[in-house]
Every structure is written in structure tokens, then in C-alpha cells.
Image (cartoon, rainbow, N blue to C red; front, side, top):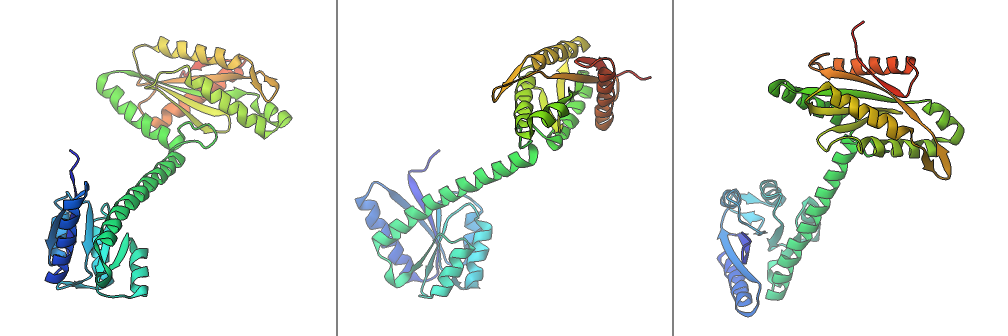
Length: 313
């Protein structure tokens, strides 16, 4: 439920300052659509206790309190309220302290003697909006970092790290619900020749085209990952029969053999696929991938452009 009020916590022990803020906000509430709800406490410890209960939109903080003094007051409050904008409300017209406080994360630094209603309301409004903007940018940066950490930069496919996390959970689910997982190891046939003859830029475009085509052959619940170079892994999760893996493998072989038109070049590429099954071949992640890799080399030895299941020799 969205509050009708901007909820302000004033951490201040000076009665005159408390009265000043109350009067300014009461006057604003009487004359404007935007409403403010004020709570106040006289100690930092009481402020931290109130913050822990939630429901605060912005904090007005005096850094000279009975139980805390100076910049440490702000740091302590900020540590307990990282998601709430804090405006410092100070007696000290100290530019050095103001700059340091802002560097530590304060949204604004107000001098009590200079505060009037317009300045107070503007500071509160701007601080909330600025904090929202910074929070959104931080979330976007975190998502970008997560994308980089878990995905291949060239194709956008999951990388080895994300693949292993997915496969580890898939194996656990398959064992619990008595399902089959197919691990498919794909390697493009003679990709190096294409790369050497047309250059790495075209080679990269080809890998991107291959990635899209492989993804089009599997379900949303499956995963396609790039291991590096021209090697890909497909995990078909919770399939009901071995034949499902063969159907998907045939589909991939066929779609990748269709011509790729890239920067005016008509490229023909094929792939060799090795398939291992969980639990038939193993329930160990590394072993399943190794077995699929072995089966892929057997497919290459058998003439390429085909798939092979893993078999113990």
C-alpha cells in the first residue's frame, strides 16, 4: 500500500529545532497537496531502533546528539538505513564537514539558521528523488555485473559458471523426480578454417548466428551455454525419453547446416554432437560433461555433421 504521506524521521534533541521543523511542515501540509508526517526522537540509539521498524521515507539528522557526535553519527545512521535518504540538519556552518558528510552518502546538508519552509521542502523532495535515481542506477549496475559474471560476452549465452549452477540443480531434481537429463556437447566442424579465411569478425558473427539457431531448437526450461571457442553445451532438463534428445540433436544438426549469410558471405557450417544421459551414464556433473565430450569426438570420427550417444568402451 502506497502511503499518502512522506514519512520523515527527525533525529534531534533540541526542542527549538524540533518546533521549527514541526511548524514548517504543518504550514506546508495546510497549503499543499503533498503531505508530510513527522516523527522525532532525541537520541541516535532511539533513531536506529525506529529505523529498524520500517516505514520511513527520509531522515533529518542532527549530528550532535547526547549519545553520538560528529561524522560518526551520520556513518552509524547511514549504516542502519542504507535504503533511506538522509539529510543532515546541523548547527555547524562548516564547509569541510558538509563535503565530508556528502561524500559519505548524505543527500543534503542544511544549516539550521538558514532553513526556511521552501528550502526544507525542496531538500526533502530532491533528496528522495535523487536517492531513487541513485538506487535505480545501482540496481542497473549490479544487473550488468551479474550479466557479465554469468554470461558469455559474445553470444549472450550462459557461461560455464552459470551452466554448472544450472546443471547441478537439474541433476538434483532429476534424481528426486526420476527424470532424465540429456547433456549435449557441440563442436563446430572446421570452424578454424572459416575463422582463418574470413577473419575473426566474421567468425564472431557466425558464432552469434549459431547460438541463436541452437536456442531456437530447445525449450525455455532448457539451457544453451557457450564453453568457449566454438564449443557449446545444451542441457535438456527433465525429458521423458532418450528419443527426445535424438530429436533435438537432429534438429540442431539440420538447422546449423543451413547456409549462414553474414556480411555478404554465404557460410556453410556443420556440427558434431555428443550426448550423455543422467542418470544412465553418471550423476556427476563433471563426468557427464566429459562423457558428452567423448561422444562428440566419436561423432567427428564417424564423419562429422551428426550426433552420437556416449557408450562405455
